[in-house]
Length: 242
Length: 301
Image 1 (cartoon, rainbow over the protein chains, first blue to last red):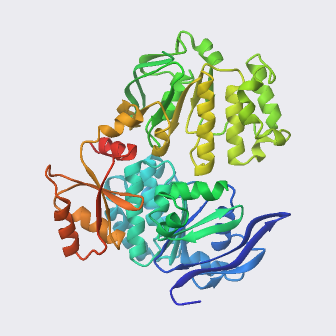
Image 2: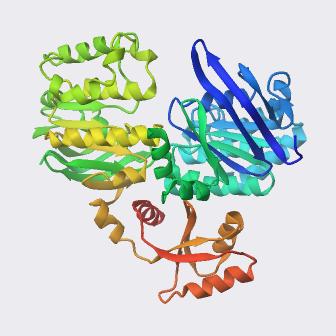
Image 3: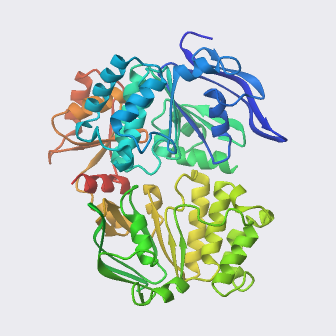
């Protein structure tokens, strides 16, 4: 694996019975890159992502995440990555501070480190007034911003974001992407799925899955040129409908 | 007039879910409620479908008052809630049959109306609803909401979490239903879908920001907007935000949408500033406002 490659996937496949959910996909993601992982519902994105984060064993092929093997070193992978999704992010019944402490503990941070990170995060997001409020009482956009910061608590090499901005208002959605840019600029690799095609344009490179295969992988600019489209939405429609 | 909403307000404890909302939807109109999570869209749907009482104000649907005539409303509207709420343990066909029977009709009687949609899931009619994919659940829910031939159809975020291809197909289905004379009130957090409605209400935090046709709404945008690009987007956003004369800076796909505070703004000034700050491959070009630009400008105020 080259020094600056943090995700390396070769012929990765997952078969359920006689259904091939992910069919020999291959790609590399570089350190600090924002990699968009797109596809229609049911195209195999979630299955592929589960293999990469070490919670589902591949049927064949190989993959290394943060230098660790997805077959034999899944515990190392889990320590090296952050994860958040639209569906699961934080515990609604815990306060902001309690969530930070809980996830800090899960990731094995020391008490001092947790308290330092907690103050830093609350200050950066301007959450002083709601630090002791239950997360369930906060607007969705805030929750998602907090969840993203929490996924970075243990300074992971890679963060996996599964539709992080669904339903979030347009201003907060952009603030969220500014946080992503900042993290990537600090060297964290971002692996993100989204159904907002304008967000696909914010990625350094984008892959598009159709029926278990990666049908396209390039920069948004090159994909648009290649498909003679003026937007990623149009590229997506052309690929997924053909 | 198919839906008349007058000064409706609703609070949950201290939270103002709806604050003095007034909307009128014409017969046969495809009308969009555009706003993020927590805007109050679902509360409004629940009031109009008579499953929740407003604190203040009045409303009528298909000529029936939401309080005095609530039973008539229930007979004449179709409602597809945001959460999948069919019977997971019944099959596709059993669900459809159930809803037809409840409304005193049969599948065959109104088959014509749902045919386009139902044929796509008919091959799976013996499958339990809980085992369907997201896209198929959505088609079944729509079929069930239509089976009694409603005059007004309420769709609460039917496309949230749905991929762009399926979203496009869903909107094509809505257009065909509209052609059959059904009034449709649909909510969505996706601003690009707003352009497909006859008229839209932009809504946030329980308040209406603006009501108009999609074309007219973007014309209300008060300032010239510029697409700005450079070699490093993160640095570009940082430097634009630090620029003394900026009014707004929002990433928009490939470029950043930038507006300036000054009336006589000269893009060359901005170019010089960005160059001095170390940005390369600078691109600045006038562009048109979208519904999302308008929404954000109104939401900022």
